[in-house]
Image (cartoon, rainbow, N blue to C red; front, side):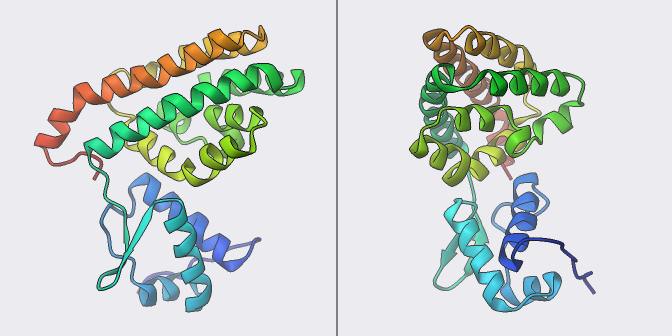
Length: 226
């Protein structure tokens, strides 16, 4: 029998959402998995109402899909889906970085410096799992002061972006991004908006190229992002 998970703080639906999001992003719940309401409600010790609200939040984050006959399932992403996500990230995160160079406060920039120093000491795995204010990209998007960019990069697309990073982290070369982050922070601190944008776009584009190089092997093994 599954152990009922105990939570503290937040609404029941928010707590269920947080736990399921972590498990989907990390791959603990594999892509394509059916999310049966009865089993999940029993596992989390909640009624169907909060559970369905959590599933709606996951659907809004593009992590879950619903079909008339199959109910809720974890999204399946193929190589083309990932390429498109990288392309969107390159444009949106580049713009966010340009705006952040103009709008972040000195205190926020100092916090960003502290963050990347701390991340330098973390293991590769821990570094790749940063969430919210522990996430370099999240902080820059928030620092853009653009409500629409924040909605996309810190909200609507955020879980999908995290899933992308988590599942592609083992590709050769992907762990070399820390030096890119240092250069981006240097440009932000110099208030060089053009350089900051260029460095972020190049950072994401390079990650995409590494993924494209590895994609045929992943597809041949039928692993892709599963």
